Length: 119
Image 1 (cartoon, helix red, strand yellow):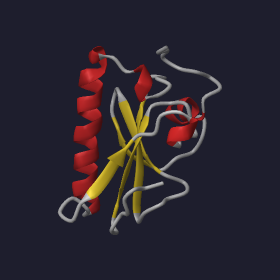
Image 2: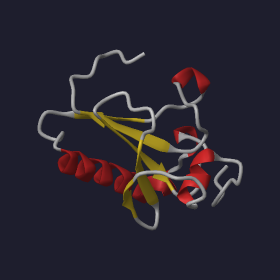
Image 3: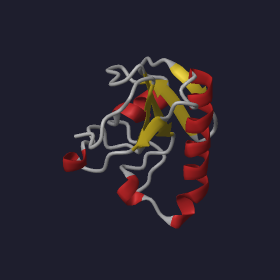
């Protein structure tokens, strides 16, 4: 279920400015912040400002939001100097998928060779 905000959600609180973050991009639909526990030299989280629990809750109507998220990730990768050598954009779904915050977000990671499979 999609709601504008969940007051108990960590990322909703960051979006609202109630908790500190290092903001790298913000517009009316998304917020990009530095991960506080980076797994790569560049590790930025690209969050939906609307509370959407995970990618499992997306519908075709979310297409414009996803387009903006991926375009922003590509722009951030260029600004971070990781676009030419490559980077990863990933979202986790559910506990077994590695999701630790139930709010739609994508990890932009790069700056070193990344392994596969990741987990």
